Length: 630
Image 1 (cartoon, rainbow, N blue to C red):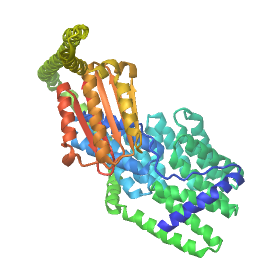
Image 2: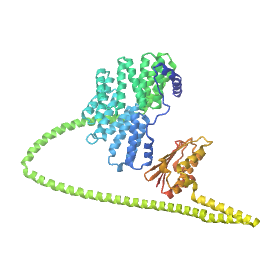
Image 3: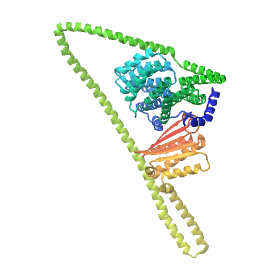
Image 4: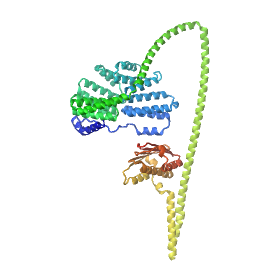
């Protein structure tokens, strides 16, 4: 397999320039790495926040971004991450079932995109079991729709059809309704009912919001291109696929990009343009391997095998058939058929039980009608019940008020404790600031006294002795006084921290980095924001911050083996945040986080009431987050 991938990449590198010039400047891309569309800010927020609900919402957001852009492995990873976080903090989350159901939806999407239908079905069946239509309507019908789509891929159209009709009729969510109609059009396309499929696709396109539903529109355009291909309108089909390909790459819909390229390769193969077909299909194959799209990988291998057989290249055809078997075995190995079959039977049984329950409910209504007529005759009993109900209601209301009052008292007590803690923390910060300001004033006063008083007196004595003609003895005294004068001046300059008094922290750090970079291969960037505001911080804090950055850079250059270091210094409200990132070898934070360098940094931060957070894994680089209150 590795030999074939290398050969494929070699063919693409050599052949793409020719393909670009000969096929109307059509461009095809093979991705060396999986692009990550998630904003780094979300990852930083995930690392820094400790609130369970905030963490769960961030993970859910990241997972849905990966769903939008088709990052299969990342979808599955963050689906599992979301589920584990919800289970971990379940007691603190009032609507934990809803987030568990969302994690099942994410995992089902990820497994479906890999072609693991049975695994995907298991997650959606689990999602249905904990998402009642009465309280989680949107999630319930979302799982139903995804279940129907899996049946479509498994070509079980008779099973998918009633589920889709049920979603279209009962969901109140407009977007979900349109997605169900689009899936119904897919069903008719798979059954080669072209006219019905086209009509439904255009109906959905007319109702979609162009600004919000671009990916759904592109999926429909892709299927309309397939219809053109079936009806042998190859020019129209190529226009559709080319449009989808360009829009997909512009908007980072890499899964759609691969599908469009694969469809274009099929058309070139159909038109017997084998060189172009081979180039395009090889490009699609590399991307399916990179993106771990097992089902599509199998389809591309099948098409390439047919192409090589047609060209009597049996060696490559045989090699690809071996890979086809391996991919098919991998898909089968990853399926949980027995568990899924049990869940599917359970789901179908529940559906039948609902029908039986509806019949029983009708029978019960008839019996209630008979019972009601009997109850009319017992007027005295009804009157007694009517009198008793308000009393019970009042008792329940009183009990609920008592419970509410207890909760309010408890909440108020917690709020008061938080306020006291906040005031104590603020007082502590004020004392630290006052101490630092006092030290700074005292240092300046001593420096001033040394320079102005003692230094001035020494300079005067030196001048008087210089004017005296008392020979060698005066010269010795003048030399001693001159030496003493320079010592006093040096001490005053050291106390006054002239370098930190006259320069902003940004300039000092940039000069320090420039000195380090001279004669080395490290790429170090420093990004202060807002720079003018940061340069106004006090001298004591400026000195400590500079020494912390020095210590971090020294540690990194000694041990990390990094070729890129990024330093971000941000001021937000009353907090100064220092973010230090490198792409080095990383380390185990449980074993190596207490070295001399980090101990020195922690001591400095203790004086400033600052916090230190280290995120590092071997071979994955290091991120250090420091926050200092101002």
